[in-house]
Image 1 (cartoon, helix red, strand yellow):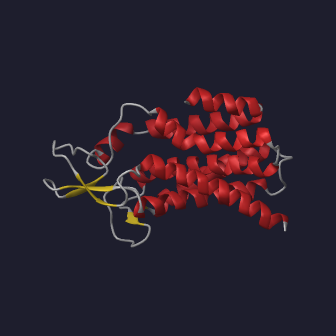
Image 2 (cartoon, rainbow, N blue to C red):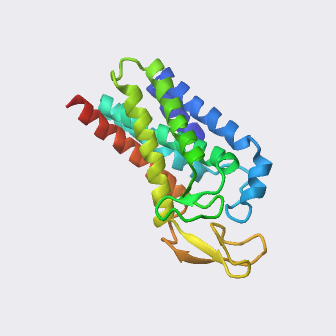
Length: 235
């Protein structure tokens, strides 16, 4: 899946390939940063996978690749900005999650502001949110350097769109994503089987909506926000 998305980016041009590689390298580095500490902190909450699956890669990079494919069919700055908005949203979400878990303190629900278990979708921290906005700005800065002719306000559009996508991801995580409960440990979790060995039960949200679907939604909202901002700024 990573190869397919990489081929699409490379076909769009070397600048797009560099932006994608920057996203991949920065996200991977943050994921590996203090990985054991993060695993211990969220072992009761998040499914522990040995490596990223094709589904996760598609969830984070699929909207970006789709926008580039649409741009092949009908070359337009609008589709290019949408692709960057989607990638900035994915990068912002990753930075917010990886940095927020270790340095953000106690997360709170983005809607109710009640405390939530560390690692649960929909939980935000001030430091994590700022880290996510920085992740969106990182993609925006790089794109504005590599693609200066795309749009005079490229930096603003991509940075804001990425942040909108990240916040949309959190909102979806707090409302429609499946939320499970371990009756034995009396803990909220996203795991189907709790570390205690007890099978958890679905309590809120939609059973079929997991973090992967929420990530797709966040990237899609980042793309839509980029298109909307482009229209507004062009007047």
